[in-house]
Image 1 (tube, rainbow, N blue to C red):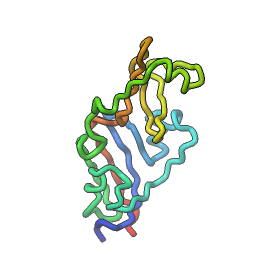
Image 2: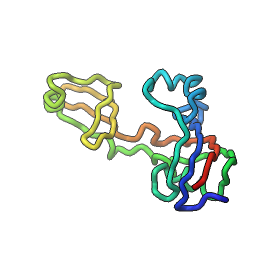
Image 3: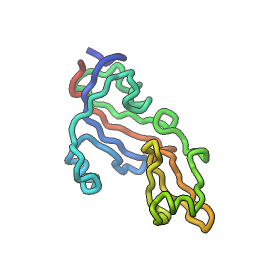
Image 4: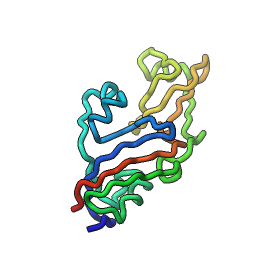
Length: 156
């Protein structure tokens, strides 16, 4: 049986950047080797189940799953436009320094700190000035070509 839109697929995966850095995986041994397990000590590493066509994963992965069979392994290379897109100036927001300090209970973030927007999107503080603080809310993997090693475990 090959994967089609509407199928529920269980898979193991490892995602890498162009420089071979592992940024995500379902395999605990890979996470430990890459140092991800230390960064996310409460995370459980287990196969991922997705409903193909329900937009639960990035577009390029969803497209790459179609036609695969249970037990098959493959490598998908996904360009930014089928992953998290290109970084955009529209995703960089400016806050008045005094207002942001007040919102944060008197604290002022430093460059490199992360803030969470009301919608839950994390943003990196990229500039702290006397008048303005700039926060980059672009997805962390925007602009990156992603490579996924995938093993199809089951298709329902």
